Image (cartoon, rainbow, N blue to C red):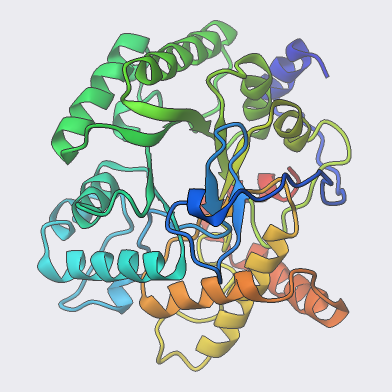
Length: 365
């Protein structure tokens, strides 16, 4: 498909949605364990595209949704809400994040993704003195092109500088700019956003502020387009990939990912927790069933070799242990497991919150 067709489909929203089989691609030989950050023999590591980094097959997402079920007094916040401005000052909150990061490190997990000011400030604190154990992904989304006042290269680099200073960071391992979520129908504005984004990413690498660069997007057609147009800056991408996502047989994002050797972090693997029946607490009567659903989902997602790693938001030590265990389980689902996950996925789509209906656009990728 041509770039002009990508543009037209993006503007009109007419991209096809057809089921497909998992993308097949050769897996490069694993380098010696001594070259893998925070290596643990019980964890699997995958090459993050042309960055050359070997990252754990499951990583730590920045969001802390449902943490209110773990902390008291009453806790509200999801990682990017106004309540989190105060949460990240709380001793008990930071203790929870410190423990979760510590258990992740013990499990061999070596990447954490932070995509809001609050997440960056929290994880930069609990990673202090431990940057040699985990790679840090960064997106200060309120100073990125999701907001119109940050849609020039100069302003984007200014926002990065301000965020690094506030978080006490000299650099980040991955600056992955969050592209706008709204539908942009003006092609001139669309091109200007792209050019500003790529200018900023290139400059950040040149100045040593970001080792690697990429973008996250909630728009499949736009994402494929920027991968094809800007292969130097797009080293890593982030996009939704759930327990029921499938590869399009034609014009898939994975076609461009394979061609340009791009690393992939799958966000929303549990579809904003719609995959689960319970509330995430250990006292829930369906806690064991939800643990199993989480492991089935991780195994299914990792069955697509083009996905480097899913990055679920984890709020307890048990959740870290559970997803790490999934990596060590048999990868291919048998017939009964596949039927079980299909039923769970059907319930997942029906359970999506009104403000997450857009996630259905990522059933086919």
